[in-house]
Image 1 (cartoon, rainbow, N blue to C red):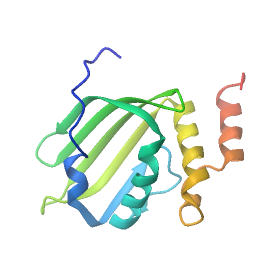
Image 2 (cartoon, rainbow, N blue to C red; image 1 turned 180 degrees about the vertical axis):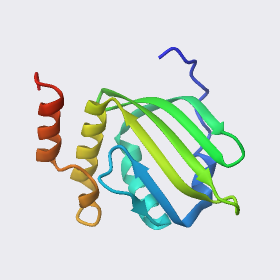
Image 3 (tube, helix red, strand yellow; image 1 turned 45 degrees about the vertical axis):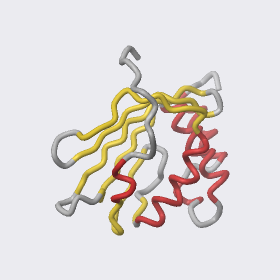
Length: 143
């Protein structure tokens, strides 16, 4: 990527403190949407330590009702890029979060790693090890 990097953020994104109780999270690495503030926060707490680093190329308001961030990162030394789009409702709360990880190989790894660590309460959200391996073989014949 050629976009310049932003200075490291001073803290979490501002929408996180304004997460609606009935918020929904959808993501490339998820098998289904996640509903509810507590569930979203629990998953984010598990996901953040997986990143070796995050280098932001955009982080800020995107129009009146959206917040967006875009970053490059690595997970276990595998490059991954991410775009996050957050919708803010009329009360100024984040009610819908959409997370797009790419490329596919890195997203499969992320989903598998999350499945390995989240436990029974959330394991159905992610690809199991065998599922991730099967998809990897289909998408990359050399794997």
